[in-house]
Amino acid sequence: MDIHEGSAAYLRHLAEVRRLSPATVRAYHSDLEGLAASCGDAELADVDLEYLRDWLWKAVQRGDSRATIARRTAAVRGFFAWATETGAVAADPSLRLVTPKRGRTLPKVATADALGHVLERMASIAAEGDPVALRDHAMLELLYGAAVRVSELCGLDIDDVDSDRRTARVLGKGSKERVVPFGLPALRALDAYVVRGRPVLVARRSDTTPFPALFLGVRGGRIGPRAVYDLVSRELGPELGGQVGPHALRHSAATHLLDGGADLRAVQEILGHASLGTTQIYTHVSSERLAASYRLAHPRA
Figure (cartoon, rainbow, N blue to C red):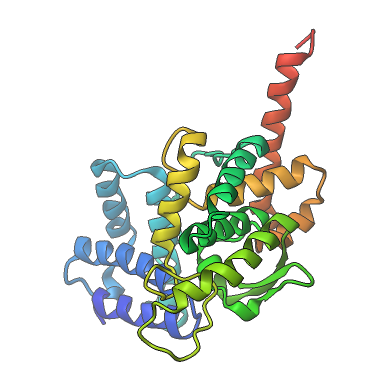
């Protein structure tokens, strides 16, 4: 088995057995394709530590970031761990591969006041009744109010929202389902969109059969992540001084929850993090704010 055949079999394993998302499988495919190109027609069993080091060194020479190189290292380790388990190789050559340390980058966080101004402006525009404005306001309120990922937002169906309990059932990473709460502002925006905005967008569909998606595009199909990215960048970018995506609202919600005294475990559940360590990045963000306030206000700072 050469490396091309091996990587193709591994990608099928990721998609069909481990049931990783298509986006994750595509990322693995890109990384392993680069490895295969570097190794040429080498047999999988002949790929050793020197092959792998040479591949990563070429990435360094190209100027790839440490985060990219770390991701590729993780991809190749997963690949060879699988190859070892299945007997495709006798020993795992990636075990001694060193992963470069990733620089710690704090997420961009908007202040509660700044987000309040944005959402109030969106509510004012939506009040005029335009279906797209109603949808956009509801999406921003839910992204911030429920701290959901953009993929989770786009995947919502009408029946996933429980208005009485103010909760939404979302499908997160690894196809893990969870129920997240949201507040009254998000409920009001959702109700206005579902009653006054969504029926107009549904009517634009050429297919008249019932369609379950909650958030719809201008032609009546399920909205995609790109449209949500464009919306957030347009509305929130000026507040954060640059191009931002939907994750900025998720970061902001998590930080504001912790600033308000929320329990770290509760925030972990809301965000759907598998590891508490992932959630703890937000305690660092909050600590940075606390330190900044201290330096500005304390006479002995």
